[in-house]
View: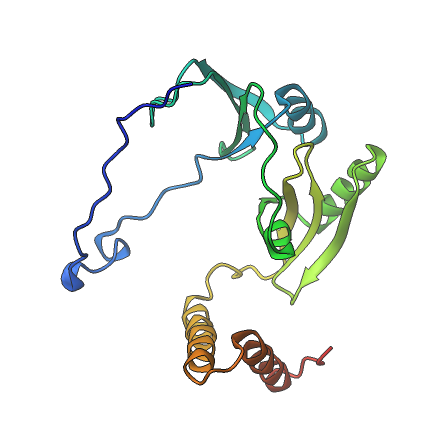
Length: 218
């Protein structure tokens, strides 16, 4: 198998400090077009996303090489459409070896895709539907009053979440988000500079914040 040499060049130019942000230029993506993963069984994947998750098979592409990189191997690309028009997509490549095992549980726990449902009642309908189809799931889980979710895996082992916001402003807490980001990074970097364990320092910070908001420390 040969690979192409026409790999897009990586820029080595240092970003000017005065360039600012894309947001300041009113450059923000309009919506999620698609998120894509690899599948070893496109038939089982199509059955799961259409029959179990109720998505429409939106489009397909297949070719003997990858247009973006020129890699020469045959692939099948399939898209599944949700109610808002956004899609989830998969690639199947023949005789692809299995992926390497994750080096830490966090990779399998946190790498996931969350799909929003209509309301809390529908979330419970989804739970019953998954149970009726022998799809194991966790939940519903309430995330600090922000969202409520159930979690399960597709036939490829990818973790999925069905969720409903409980806080109508759940994705508008920008100021608090920047404050929390600074607190997390500052705590981590301070611990490193002092030769302390960053993980332990972050746990201490989290527990202190729980005291502030009256949340029990587990």
